[in-house]
Length: 368
Image 1 (cartoon, rainbow, N blue to C red):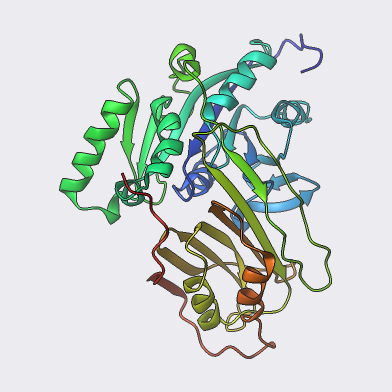
Image 2: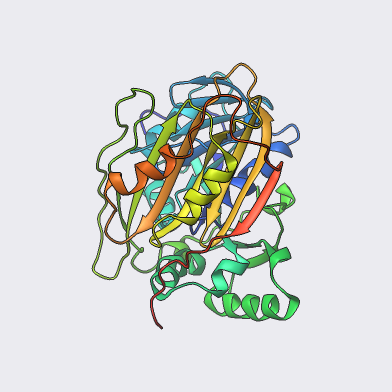
């Protein structure tokens, strides 16, 4: 990581992992909003996209995002260590760094990379935090349990999120099962990622022997053909990671357009997605609410579209990312679904400020 010896104390690093849609970004935003006077640095590696609440953002320069509370966010696609170095070389470096791993990556690999490549007097790992979607975990397929199981076993702190969506008996049974998988981790229950920051930051819970033991789970992720919007060239390409026979294969597909969307048509499009899609998220430019950004989240069969922050000086734009497993669909299977959501300004009809529903399509599940 370059020269050391600045005399400054080593920065503490918290690695946040968890399966697709577990609520990692929601937790991250909560921590940022309640950071008090602590200056945080954030590294996001979620398929190359920064996904921080609009209300926290005050400036963007390349892959660095300045946040209104004095924190800073960095999006990385390849070199984790370089992203950390850039944060620490800033004029006002962070006091604590949070790394949000992608939903199909293993936080043990992140921890291993830092342990191996960053001197201990520069950065030390404080804890590996793993977020679990309580409701989704109860109905996971065998493939999903394999991918999620490794990070859970390596957790120093386990955040059992969305507990408000599970009855008490099921929640107690799930917590007992998770405790058998991660005997040493502290388990915290939460709704909407609301966890007191002092329970996650500066806890000194990292156990290298526990987190780095065994063979990390590896998955194969690549980008399917990207949806281009309004004359833009398709973004991205194919990104390959090492994988093993027992690992899952995931793909991503993105779509961008400046034309407004009909909320009613968007719901129809989401219901018509291939059953291999396990996650979808993005910012939506709704014709019915042209001055306010809407945010969409799809996790399994659950879908939600709700209003967020005013667009402000930003140009209203719809940006979507789909994540799925198995053979990636052809772009012509996905692009028409979202092109059909586009309407002229002022059209689209009224829309509710918050819309939640259960998708008609049941995502593919493996037996066992």
